[in-house]
Image (cartoon, rainbow, N blue to C red; front, side, top):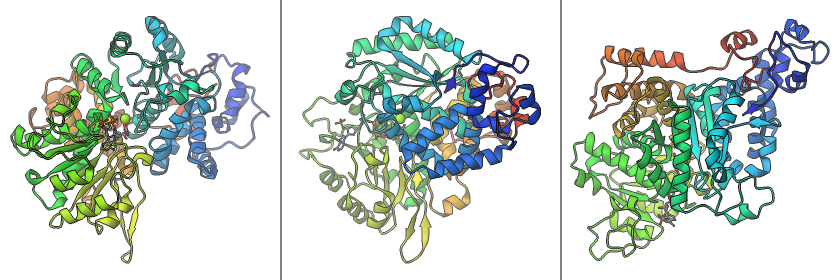
Length: 608
Ligand SMILES: NC(=O)C1=CN([C@@H]2O[C@H](COP(=O)(O)OP(=O)(O)OC[C@H]3O[C@@H](n4cnc5c(N)ncnc54)[C@H](OP(=O)(O)O)[C@@H]3O)[C@@H](O)[C@H]2O)C=CC1
Ligand SMILES: CC(=O)C(=O)O
Ligand SMILES: [Mg+2]
């Protein structure tokens, strides 16, 4: 978010920015000389602090807040008043802060967005684009307004939602803006995208949620969602205008209702540099964890029987990615690979002869082998399928209850059961880590969408850390890789390379502890490796367009081919990627010198 202010430079100091400066905690780091030049003597406490002390104070205040939503509001204030301090804090405390700025708290923040919005930023802040469907014909004017507000730095990356399926919370309308804002914070924290070059966008196309339409404080347009024809006409106009204005900008589609998620991806994936996080990002991250799980499960990949609960954009996206893995990596013929998957949706097991008209995205995996068997419930399907892996993307809280978990344990006595309750936020998670451990005699191979606490096995004192199967491990490197090597488009094999690189990124220690994902504290390191693998793959597929990266990738030989990616990378490319990752400044002098336009750029918030 960026406070709008009159441009003031160090050579043209203006008293009008003084209150902003003092309000900002950056003020206490200003050296005496700067204070003197700015006529600030006596207007700020006399202590001159380093950034570590500032960070300590902010952390202390954060920990004093009693609810997560208060923490969210407080962190938004820190970010909008001192972006450098905010990212120092986030990077040093990612495990503690990620659940506040991202899932689960961001879900609650979205539900309350219209109620808390004015407290998230200083008055007159620009935190991205709010594009009402009623203003679609004025999209060029909206983009031009944004350009004026950013004073020069063109966005490199955007996350766009229409708020129609926010996490598992349903249609939140304009309130969904919290998701692009949160995802972009992870782009910066996890992969070092430049915070000034991130653009959150909400397509304010109305909402079908009566609660918001009736809420006097709701800040979106008060109308119901459009029909499909109107939706696509408006969305296409906006995407076309954005692409024209910012031709190199990477576009991430996020949390669109499933039919539109597939529709937009199908329409745009070969035309512009874009990607759908819920379909492709989730597919990629779950494949990464699944590869590690299969290695530990004690049953060969070709014998896996995978039951999905939930057949939306995420469920089908993940299954397609896993099927590709069996086809590409294990040379299993497509029909045989497809037959390793079963789905349950709100009407029971998905079969071709169920009697209802299946949505297009469900047809590929619909079963034909069920004969007269039509399982209506998860329990029946579990007994029919006898799965080795159970994956929840259903938004149904506790769908994996004690009976389901115990049955998975019984069915998998000679191997370890894979159980991934992936729905977000935690109020929608199919089960918790503790439940999965208790009801499988601690044998489960587990990953969840939302972070669950470490579980200590009673009697042994042994700690087990649950995997977080969340696309936050992959969308930041996919975005950074795209910004760096500018591929013409993003292919399934590039996404596959990302999954492989994620699986490869585990340390021996993490593997020995049975973990499926790298520790979140190492996310910058793993992001650099995954970004490098993505770039190598784009180069192998002749899709990269940035000469320096093409040359560097070609000069360093790595394994894998365009058709069969193995997610390897050269250290030279990793090191180069790391150099391109933005880091907050360590001290005031570095801040001034590292950011050439720090004194006037609205996102920098050091208002001289
Ligand atoms: N971990 C991660 O990184 C990610 C997690 N997610 C999470 O995945 C979840 C689903 O997202 P998405 O696929 O886009 O959402 P959708 O709403 O499109 O899909 C939900 C699916 O669950 C099914 N379902 C609903 N009720 C039941 C029930 N009682 N039993 C079985 N199935 C049921 C629906 O059935 P029907 O089709 O019949 O309506 C639908 O197929 C969300 O909670 C989201 O937060 C999403 C992306 C990433
Ligand atoms: C994580 C994510 O993208 C989702 O739950 O929708
Ligand atoms: Mg999402």
